[in-house]
Structures are given as structure tokens and as C-alpha cells.
Amino acid sequence: MKILAIETSCDETACAIVEDGHNVLANIIASQIDLHAKTGGVVPEIAAREHVLKMIPVLDECLSVADCNWDDVDTLAITRGPGLVSSLIIGTETASVISYVKNKTLIPVQHVVGHIYSNWLEAEDEIEFPLIVLTVSGGHNELILMRDHHNFEVLGETRDDAAGEAFDKVARLLGLGYPGGPAISKIAEHGNADAFAFPIVLLEKGSLEFSFSGLKTAVLSVVKELGEKFDKKLQADIAASFQKTVVTTLATKLKMAAEKFPEVKELHLAGGVSANTLLRETIKEYVPAGIKLRYPKSIAYCTDNAAMIASAAYFQYVLNPGLYTSNTNITPSTSFKML
Image (cartoon, rainbow, N blue to C red; front, side, top):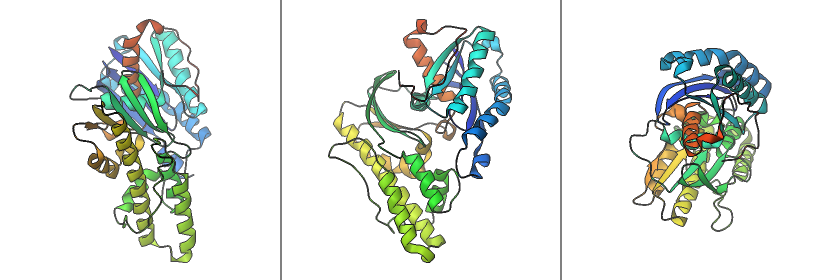
């Protein structure tokens, strides 16, 4: 079953064709990073305008790379939300029109669920349930227990800033570029991760929720205290110390979740921050014996992309094919929940 998916939840115009939830035939992403780097963050109006400009070229390229025509596409999938409404509208309207014109079934997918299914893309072996997923991105931070496909129990989520959002805000405080994650990781390579003892916030005993706002404030206090003493060396030290603190917090929470549910067979990382090398290496040290650790096979599957949406849609469809019809009109939703 070939699914063509569209993803426009934020500032990436993406289209992919995936077969049977695993085999990626094409995964095209038109990035807007250079545009939003000028303002230090995503401007919704600019993002939406770029989606309008890029949508048709990206669709055409996707079909060409996959060597498919519309007759080869069995069904469509679209990110319905959450995300920037102005961006989501471009994707949902495009998918709805194609569903009508081409008489194709259209499957709405929740964005975080898409990230979860990035680990099924090009997986070389069978993924075993139950498993726990740690999603880490700019807008989302969750620990999720999966007992089967599309069977989700949220164990914990962020109370304030998500990890990716904290990276962006601290990068801005340090005078680094956008997006913050790669900028901080790059300069942290030249810093001392033990130079500053930033707080590791674990919240109440046994809590699996996250909070990074206090860490952001701690970095701000250090930068203000340093004043004119702040230089490139201290910039690198702060970046390295901040990154270590975030990674340690995430790894600790994931280990706590695994210990709370000893029946779990796998631990998964997903989302943009799952591309962070230090996070991957640190979590390997925290994984209990006998549990398999997975993260997306390609860095392209960590950030927003349409292949993950197609994979999630496939397993969603298999569970209840009668739920979806052709000529479907999908409206975006910032509060769209996991199914």
C-alpha cells in the first residue's frame, strides 16, 4: 500500500511516498531555515507564504523521485495538527483538494504520532511491544507508553518549555543562530560541560513530567552575572553545560519510565532533538539491560518530515480502514489529540 503524505505543521514543506509503513520511496523536504534565521525564530505569516510557493514543486518532485503517478498512490495522509494554524491550512487544503479531484482516501494524522512512527521507517527488524517513546522537539516533550499500534498512554509531558524550545531560547541568549539545537551542539564541542552546574529539575518524586523553564532562567542569570566577562570561551562552556543538563534530565526520566514498566522491550527516541549525538550516546548508558534502544535511522526522519506521517497513517488505516473515505475535507486543529 503506497501512501502519499503531506506535512506542513510548521516551517517545513514536506511530501513523501511510503509503502506499507516502512519502505520510503521518496521523502522531499523544502526547508525554510535560512528565512527564519534572520528573525531568530519562525514567523507564521512567512512560513505560510513559503508553503504556498513550495507545495506544488515539492509534490511534483516527490512523485518523480518515487517514480509514481497518481494512479500508483493508494491513499493520502496529512498532518492535521497540532502546529501553526496558518501553516497547517496550506497542507490540509492541498490534501483535501487532491482527495476530491483524485478520489483518494485521506487520513488525518496527529503530528506527535507522526514523530513516534519515524522509528518504523526503514526498520531492519520487527519492533516489539510494549515500548516507551521519548519525544523531544521544539514544541513537544512526552514520555509515551505504547502497548500496540496507536495504543498510547502519556506518562509525562512538559509543564512549560519543551527541550527543543529551551535550546532555541538559550541559543538566543548566547547570541547563537537558529535553530538552537544544532547551534548549541556545534559550539558545545569546544566547551567544558562541567564549567557550570545548572539545575537538573526532576520535579516531585517519581514524576515523569518535564520542566526546562528554570534551566533557561539559570542560564540567563549566568549570562547577566558575567556581563563584560562573557566571551567565546564562556559561551562554549555555558552551551556545553546547558546541553549536558538537558540530556541528563531526558535520560534520567526515560530510565525512570523504563524501571516503572519492567515489561517494556524497547525504548525509542523521536523528534528533532533525537538527532542530538550527545543525547543518543548518554541514553545508551542509561538503558536497562535487555532493552533495545531505537532512534530514527536517518537524521531526515528526526525533524519534521512527511515520511513519518505516511507511516503513522498506514498503521492507523490498517486498524480501521472503514473509518476513512475519499473526497474528504480535513480542517486543521491545534488541539488535535492522539487517536
